[in-house]
Image 1 (spheres, rainbow, N blue to C red):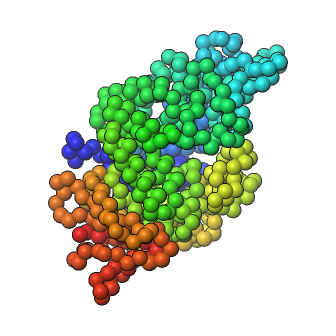
Image 2 (cartoon, rainbow, N blue to C red):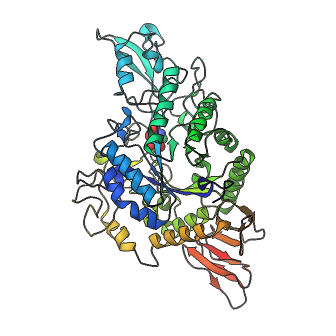
Image 3 (spheres, protein in one colour):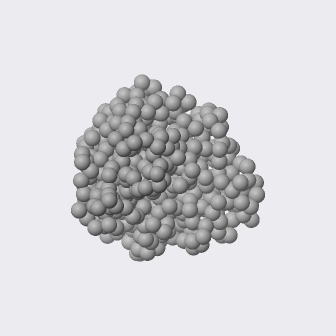
Length: 546
Ligand code: NOJ
């Protein structure tokens, strides 16, 4: 690998959701020793890096995105020694490790917030958060009209030591997640130290949670948009609490810290902004390395829409010299097998299309098994704080705003729950009985399985620089509903890679050059006719060497 092409520019990064990956002690919740024991699965899958969702000390009000101590591992997940051992083992297997960093807010059990609650209005302890007096008679109304992403006002009122209502504090997410005030130097200094703490422990980088949220507009002005409509502005229109220009100074500082540790340490932004150009500002050369591509994730299975999303992403990231990234599933959205609406074939085709695009791709645990969203979890077992607050379920697959359905623990082996997730039957969310057929053991070695398709795709991608960061050239004249592109790489020896994905409702006749060698296909198989044409089934994606 040359200096011009560092590892992360075309890396495949696999998201582990620790509570649902593998449970070593049988308490029904996944943990770090469980992940450690299953690292060989990831090495065999062929990914380059693992991103771990939060495993820090936390009351788990938002599944660990409410951090009480940024330097400690929650006992439910293990110990700091387990984290160090996991990083060490991953490195031995050639896997890099990216940890989640949650800088926009902490837990309401964080020492600083407890101190702030005890402190007087206007004190230094309160200045680390956004405490304000309420509006209206008696300060009974929230300080402004901001709405929490999880629904309801973004402000909660405190109660003073005398039992009387006090100031309000800001939380863009759950009330248990108070927002830090990034104008406060203590906060900036603390996160510089937290970065160094984990870099010293050996992590290869960070996934930055709510990277677009740290800095708020001066004076915390009203949005002027009715409650429940504000969430819909996320990534669509500017708001005074997201994508403020002031966030970029923070990332310039962090880039310098990462570079002190060498060129291989990276950070990826979870940044929602109104345009791809605004998102690309987070990955300018002196800021973060990558940003998630939510615009690609939210694009329907439609050739024209996908082509526009790809072009837009490549143009925006190209302008700042960053690699594009691609993602179809994560712990916050309906799994793409279900979301795209076309079952397993479409999900496999979508994956092959994504893995053929230039740049870096993110996979979410379980998609390599073709897991569907669990859409029928009983209300009583759901733990997502957005459930019950957002009232946003109903559209599309009926799972929007319900994030438990993509977080059900993985099936590894066996025919009874917990399907090898842990030593016993316990799993913090119930697993569907049909998942026995989807377990790693059930798919391992079966050439028709989704697992073997992912393994084959990642193997090819590794061996073919054409499928790395190189050029993408659309092939014009493809039948309606079909995306067709040629991938080449500067200096790559060997043929180009031709990629075709059929998003239409029927098989399509393609002009694939004579002598093309089929490398891989997902969601079906292309058939070469005697007249020289190639029939690509609906919901199929194929790669050829041409
Ligand atoms: C984004 C994370 O992906 C999500 O799971 C979490 O609820 C919010 N940020 C708040 O931290």
